[in-house]
Image (cartoon, rainbow, N blue to C red; front, top):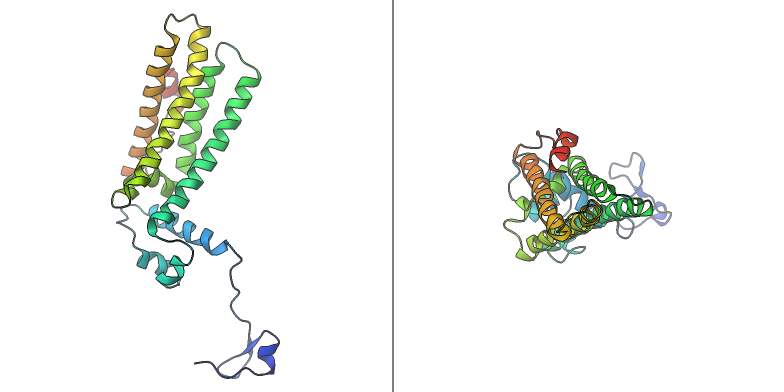
Length: 223
């Protein structure tokens, strides 16, 4: 229980319980700041090698708050994971758009192939810098969660594959392929499978096997 307010409380500083010195009250997070802190803590917990299913109790303990405090910002744990997925989508596709815009500004016979290589490299580099997000991307962290989360990540990779296919068709057409659409579909599918495979290996190795290991040489073989 707190004592009744005194003159120092009115000035925004509470008295120290021992009466030794004034104590500045704990600063309240700005609107939206606590939400970001929750997502950051969840991502950090996910990047611990061998981490089991994360509970809201463990997440609350990491943040030194109650579970009720978490639910003031997110209606459910699934919504927390959706927040991480939104971060992945926004970050990756903003970079995808930058890559495609640069390549389309100065198109040539190899621009589609370069675009595909840069998109794959960017996704793998993003994962390498964000290990916790990798477990979301490959679905490891979503196994016991709402199935709509895995569906959303599946759609993420479908969109990546569509982007690769679009650029590769341009290159196949410029190279004089008799079946540019088919060629682009086959190669885009192979590149997407390669990307997902590298992400799985990164996560399953406890983040020891870099997803960008020998990347240039690997892409040279595929492309």
